[in-house]
Each structure stands twice: as structure tokens, then as C-alpha cells.
Amino acid sequence: MGLRLPVGDVTVLLGPAAARHRVMAALDDDSGRCASGHAAVRVHRVAASAGDDVHRRIAAIEAARELGATIVLVDRLTDGLTAPDRRAVLAALRPVATGGRAVLVDDDDPVAALAVADGALRADPAGGLSAERVGDPDHLV
Image (cartoon, rainbow, N blue to C red; front, top):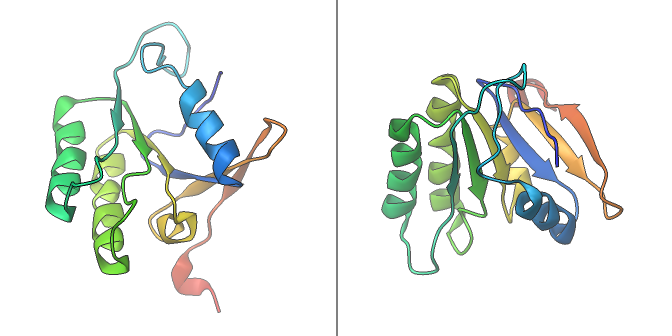
């Protein structure tokens, strides 16, 4: 699957859970390329185990930042967390993106993930993807 992600942005997958899962599963961690397509870039996937607490999940995000990956795939990292813990984990993604990485998030609560997002990709059941920009949440009524 070819997918271009903006560097410096957090992009959230929207759509039915099965369609989002299909997109994340189709992404090959070993085939990340720069925008020109000529050079390979490092891809790091972040996920959580059922027993991971909020601190361990935030540490996993920090580790992805320190590894120097250009693309960070965040795969349902907040599953099982309370709303405040989910917000804390998702907020930790912003410095990863602003540090010069493209971050793609599939979260069980995509609405919560939109709070830290710059853009969104909508996955439809037929396998299509469409890009959407996310407005400034402070300007929503």
C-alpha cells in the first residue's frame, strides 16, 4: 500500500474499525520511503500490551522519538485506558510529530485522537482512503 504522510503532522485514521485495522496491517514497516521515493526511511510501530499502564505507553512513544524513526505508526495504543490516561498518551504524540516525524494513529477512540491531529485519513470498508484536514479545535462551536 502506498501512502504519503506529512512530516511534522499527526494523522488519525477514521472510519470503521475493520477498515482502519486493514490499513494499519497493510503498511509494511520495512518499506518506508522519503517523499521522492528514492531513499529508505526508518519506520517504528508503537502498540501496547493489555497490561501496559499509561507510563509504559508514554515511554514507548518517547522511545520512538529517540530512535529517530521518520514514520511512527501508532496502533491502538490507548486501548483499555481511562479517558484522562488516553488524553495523556495521545498528547505525547505531538512532540514526536513536531520533532520531524510523520505520525499515523489508529485509535479505538478516533475522536479523542483528533484532539492532537493535524489531519485525518478516512478508511472506507471498500478499501479506499481519503484525506481530510482537521480544523483548530479551539475554533469549534
